[in-house]
Image 1 (tube, rainbow, N blue to C red):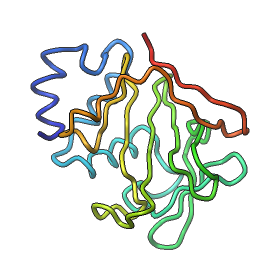
Image 2: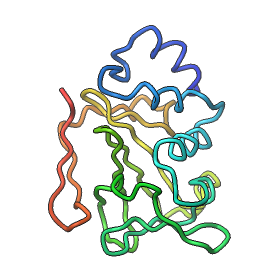
Image 3: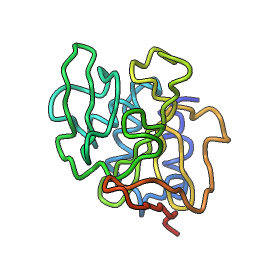
Image 4: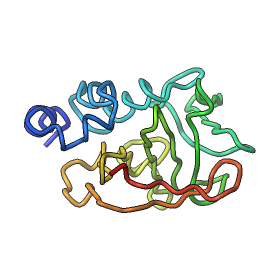
Length: 172
């Protein structure tokens, strides 16, 4: 099942699937405009969390430098988010985060990394998953065929970019 299938069978028929009242409709439009999951997820990132220059498709590494998200690109250049305030938290070490948390209009998006298996699925940054916060669950934009990726986790714990604790509670 790809994202376009989810769009036609679940989002349009059942607005509770992604929580249309809580998740920006534009987020859903971007997430359903591609044919394959990984490139579509990167298109989603480019649309909602644009880089100052370049595309998430060419990102090789995401690190936190002081309190800013720094992205290293395939061509050797580096950039940040066009809107730096969208980066809110991380898990793991700043130089090799296991996940970063972005926020757009109150909705969180988590990028998790798998550094143990380099270039997983031809992704230069070793992104394992990109999850979008829904009403009372998180849904994967990459592993959508696995029903276990829709998780009803009550709360997720991160480290805010200032070093304090950052809790994400489901929006119910």
